Image 1 (cartoon, rainbow over the protein chains, first blue to last red):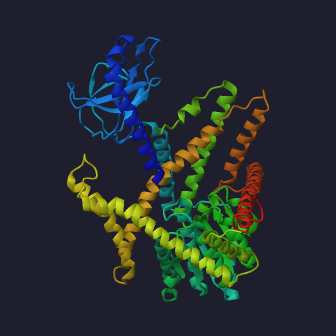
Image 2 (image 1 turned 60 degrees about the vertical axis):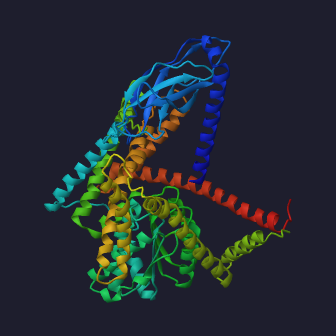
Image 3 (image 1 turned 45 degrees about the horizontal axis):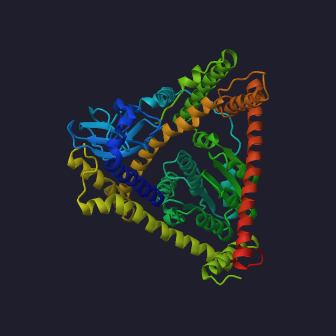
Length: 395
Length: 217
């Protein structure tokens, strides 16, 4: 934040120096240099920046032509509210460029007029305008994303309708998920608590949401076995959701009296102090089972290694590809990437949730087909048709 | 040896954290509690200064309630006040009677979060990856072997993550190739990251030996 402010200040200072030297130059030599410009610049495109929220206008011009004895530094972009002026200088562009995007306090739906002046001279392009800035509701560059979203959502809704009608879906066994119940039972037998770490993701991260659904299952089993579950949280809002999830699970299990909100607590929103605190819990409370499910970063190995040293059975899962190897190395069971999302549906056996898994599989099948077509056309015909078809332009 | 109290403090806290390698002890506990307390306090101040004051207090005090000039003033006021109101609702958790009210802002966080994240994930983790995988596979250069490996790896990896079909026969064999490729990838990532961690350790050791003790030049 601070760096960008400094950069902005430097940019403004640079612009000011250019404008100031240009004014001085024009006063001293402006008219003298005018004859060296054989053709003034000409604005050929003046338009509202597409696919944005407005507040910007793009100006393109044909470069000025000049005598080789005089090479101007660049162009000064000038703007006015009426064709007669007065024109304010709003930006500088080096001589090699001929595109400028005006973000300088542009108001949507207001007429603006532009001209381009050559530095060191009194030469300007003819005035062009009016042009207005406006926001767009639909980003045409993201049409592919929109189409994919609609197709996947439609597929998910269709399969959910089938699920509601009682269609049964098969889900293959997923290694590690079956161990969850055993791990909770082990903690109960040993009379030790269970540690559930929902990771460093925010409450709205997909991995954290998946972790909450598994947490629900773990908390319910914990309540049934009359054990204790500890949930240290990285974000305050994660803590609130976790408390709600555990509380409703205890109520579902018929043991609301056993719910203690103090077992689900906020630690800190700083990665390694949080890790140090969770390590401390593992060594002092000696949980028999550790769940590391959610979004994890560099702390994954530190946590998993400490849990291993403490002798706990460990089940981990994350969608962060870089961290999965550490969990594979130091945990008893690891849910790899999408298995984490599948786990909640698999555990609940709820037809609706299983339906979403089925929809995901259909989505993957479509991706495989597109991928094979793309590779075949690229290899056999040398065509990049599918690559272009999927193009996403975020600018 | 350094005479800078800041360097001494950093060195002592580093040693306190390193003492965890032996076993849990009061020095580690002290460093742990100190870092948790300091970071929690620090982030509270950061949130107040970088979010609450510039996004709410300053516009409110300056009377700049017209957040979106194109929209009616009343809507601008709503955009300024509503998020703060929803934030205050989170404190309803402290009341037994009104605790359920805190679910509304949480629902809003989830809804907005999902709405923002899902298209982004689709765009960056699905569509762009698809494009990058559509590589031509010919037999003209060594690079083609790499392309072949990318294509086979992605396709078999995708097959492994099919959940609604049993991994048997040809499908099972393809999935097995997929998990092998994933494991090879995990192995290389593990080695690479461990190297990076060792370099962090070296950085800490250099700090202790050079900046603190002055043993090495």
